[in-house]
Image (cartoon, rainbow, N blue to C red):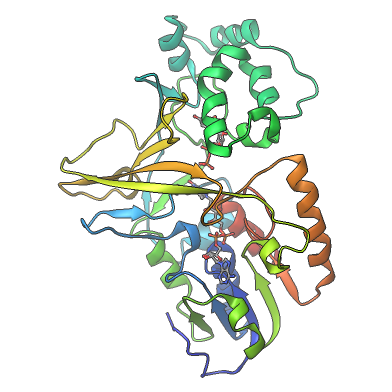
Length: 369
Ligand code: FAD
Ligand code: UDP
């Protein structure tokens, strides 16, 4: 990885803002496939964006910005990333903590049997059960509709309503159906969080993978710098911007809300603490949404273990776009401005204001850069 004093080349083909998946994959492709000279600027002290991982003070590998699980059905994305890392097979499992009792989430047959003391043994029985409790909603306009339409009020209130309110500070009825729609409802006993074809974690972590991706003679990296502090001092032909789109335009139409999270970390003197990688706290009693034990994600063996608790909040690093009609109208104003700029491309979760997973960002860059 070449840290730049931007002395080596004063003229770049591309100035790329942000070293997350969007910026890093774009830099790698442009350098290795098109021989472009690139300056990559990052305001944090490290590469990798929100997928960054590092050892904590107890020697445990943690995902500093929350648990990141790589899952995709896109073979091209998987093969592309395979150039930069070896993999460890990993299937993520989550338990919902509902008033102290643990249930598999996404809701599946086991969840229903345990919650309602049923003894369903077939998909059909569970399908019929959902049919008997669901409340038909047509059209599906929001995140309440999409869940209630499948499983009715009780399951919605138990597993979705309060978690969602904590996560977004909005009632599910004020959020696009795509938010709660990310979580499937199952009739079988599959208790994996994801069912994608490729479910692997980078064997030595994400940061190592990013380091390898960015190891190219044409790529220089500037850390700890907000691009606005240097953009007028650098010559470049094109820019790729992966930061928040409203910041780029100095908030001229007003601030686009992004949701943030405060992480509270704890190291425990036991080898394993939880029964699954994450517990989702689905009632309103606890202020946090989830606890994650990071050793599950990384496969690390160690005598102690580190967990993170997630407290969602409005202030702080922008982590999530908040998908609803109002924000989409505001985003479209910025989008129109960005479309006028021929030499700047806006890519990624913050710049496109899209609730992208990592593989979607990689796929987007591979297709368009
Ligand atoms: P980012 O990773 O946000 O990168 C943008 C970079 O730009 C950042 O490094 C930022 O510091 C930098 N930047 C911004 N403004 C400036 C500026 N002015 N000057 C210089 N640099 C700037 N996806 C999954 O697939 N699986 C998961 O399990 C998963 N879990 C997640 C959990 C959490 C808590 C969060 C927040 C996200 C999760 N994601 C997950 C989504 C994943 O993080 C994103 O899809 C991915 O990181 C987006 O990459 P990006 O490059 O678009 O943005
Ligand atoms: N969700 C919920 N209960 C859960 C899990 C998810 O209500 O137990 C809702 C919540 O609104 C959440 C969304 O579904 O923000 C998407 O969940 P996911 O686990 O994909 O969130 P992420 O990992 O992106 O934070």
